[in-house]
Every structure is written in C-alpha cells, then in structure tokens.
Length: 129
Image (cartoon, rainbow, N blue to C red):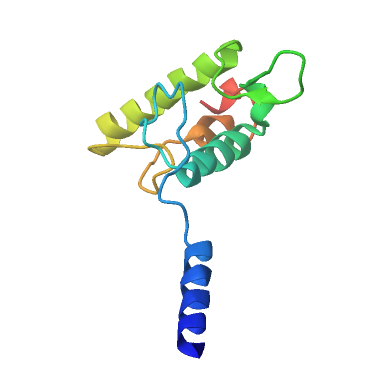
C-alpha cells in the first residue's frame, strides 16, 4: 500500500511539473513562421523591438475596443505593418550580404538587427547612416 501511494504521488508530481506540449497559437503572423514558440516570440518582441527601438508593445499593437488590453492580432496601427516591412528588410540584408541561408529574427547569427539603425530610438537617426 505504501509503494502504491508513493508511486501515485510521484506520478502526480511529475505530471504537474511537465510543460504543456502545446504552445500558444498566434494569429496573424505574416512574417514570422506560424509555429513560432512563445519563447521565441517574446525574445523577438522584447530584445529586438522593445530594446532596439526603445518602445513598448502599444507602439505597434492597437488596444481592444473599450479596453486598455492590447489586441495583438489587430492590424489597426500602421506601425505594425512598418515593423513587418523592417523585419523583411533586415532578413533580406542578412541573407543577401551576409550569406545567411535562412535568417530568422532573434537568431544569434543575424548581423543587421533593429538596433543597427535605431540605436534604441523609435525612429532611426539619419545622420548615422
């Protein structure tokens, strides 16, 4: 009886600490792969965009109607499409000029990032180009 009880406690503990095999499913990803994990997406949004441009999520993401919550899937703000264009541009530059076969944002092999031109500012300083 003791062995059965200890075994069931151990199985319950392991099951409770296991991560869910299903990751968040994001809608409206147009540049990033559809299967982008929440960890990778957080890294890109925080390390690339927030740090690289010195902005917060609301800079590109619109608020939900009658709420202060952000609607991440919405395309209501033009800054979001500008960000997509910038992502495409940096991936093209890294592929064409730095011979990266499949450059992905957030990858440590990326040479040109948001910070390359923005230096922590929402709009790049044209004098440094």
